Figure 1 (spheres, rainbow, N blue to C red):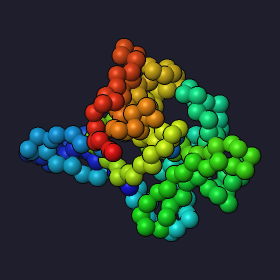
Figure 2 (figure 1 turned 90 degrees about the horizontal axis):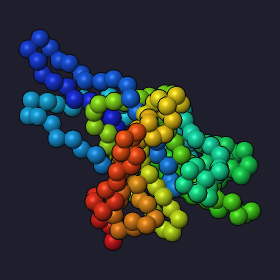
Figure 3 (figure 1 turned 90 degrees about the vertical axis):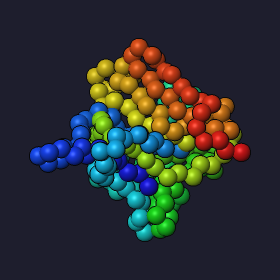
Figure 4 (figure 1 turned 180 degrees about the vertical axis):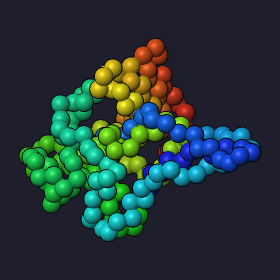
Length: 204
């Protein structure tokens, strides 16, 4: 479940929804709440409940994919596969991402018979962007050596200014070094990356 909410301010002559453009959401297999003034309310602007039939793929009007390998700047071992891809080493017969029929999205890492790891990195880039509001998700994380589940955002101008100038907000990462807590980080042209790896919900 992923939902985007925007704040609605009650004013004398109607309502104003704060909005704009700024970040694309990415999730990969490798919650944020904002305090509101008493007079403000939330209205849902975008959501995906992943309530499709068992074995079906995410809505292509809401999600696209990063694909391929090469480490992704983090020395990652896996090759990222799009939903339903048969481009080797991906396999539509054993997909890395699908809905389970119970309102859950499953993203899994798979080791192929040839020894290559595959996984999925979904994103809203080019389909939806967000600037102000509240982003929330319900997730169940798998703990294991080498796994790096993440829920994060990059600036939509990454193609023109590059990283980290585009900005990055890591809403949730379960970094292998921090197996006791989830991890958040903010990156930008001045701060590079500022992390809070020792905060968040503790898991034991």
